[in-house]
Length: 421
Image (cartoon, rainbow, N blue to C red):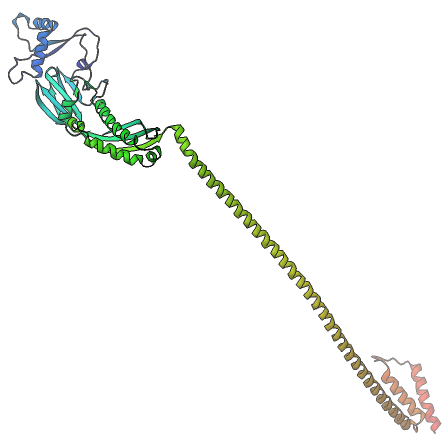
């Protein structure tokens, strides 16, 4: 499509566009784009004037002149529209093309007759003679929160979620306004809000009936299951839902909560009990710690007493050992002294005996020597004396005799010889 046709709210002078000349509409294209274009040319005075000028002088022109007025507002197919839009509708020369999603059931009526019916359809239609309805057939989540009062007059808040789908689109389109605008694809009404109101009020009615007979404590403990079962049973037995083509898939009750002040009051005993348990655990832990410390101190004291006793025993044993050692040493010294004295006495006696024997032997030897030398002359005795003296003299390596000494010695030796003569 030309950008001139897609420009929204364009303010410009009239634009003349040359298009192929439309032939006379036949039976087969009476509702086609050519017929629509011819009808638009006939209804527009400016277009008729331009066409008359172009076809003047009796010549057949292969083109016609289409005037786009500045007063006509055109919308792009991708322009943002207000409200929930499901179908994708494009504009082409007075025709509309609708394309729905696979999860949307579309119904197209033309002059009161159903032409198209089904999900995920795509077709052309004329907006002036078409009535479109689009019904979503996918599963939808409806979150709800409402207040209730228990049997003991306590306000609670119920949070629930209902999953539903439209199982019969024809019935739903007949009972609720699911019609869409043929130009924009926007719902003319608010059918989903009506469904939400119906489901919410129905579920709320059954939940209030259950909680009105249940005290607060039981509602907080077992209220979620009972409320969920009652809402599920109530929605299944509600005649308006099948009559509207609605099927409830699942019901979930998320929470039942009291008022903040009541909730704080209910939490107080539990918190106190938890605090008492914590304090008791702290005291028990401290008592166990004190008991363990006392046990440790007693063990240390007992260890010290036992150590002192053993030290006393050790000192006593050491004294006994020292005394015994001294006694043993004294006895050993006595025995050793006696043995030494006896040995000394024996040694003295032996030495005395040896000295006496030696003296006697020497005396006898001296007497014998004297007896032997009693009859020897003086010269011989002198020779023997010199020999004995020579034996007792130290070793002489060399001896020097001067002539004077030798002469005197020889003279002395010769003198006795002469005397003997």
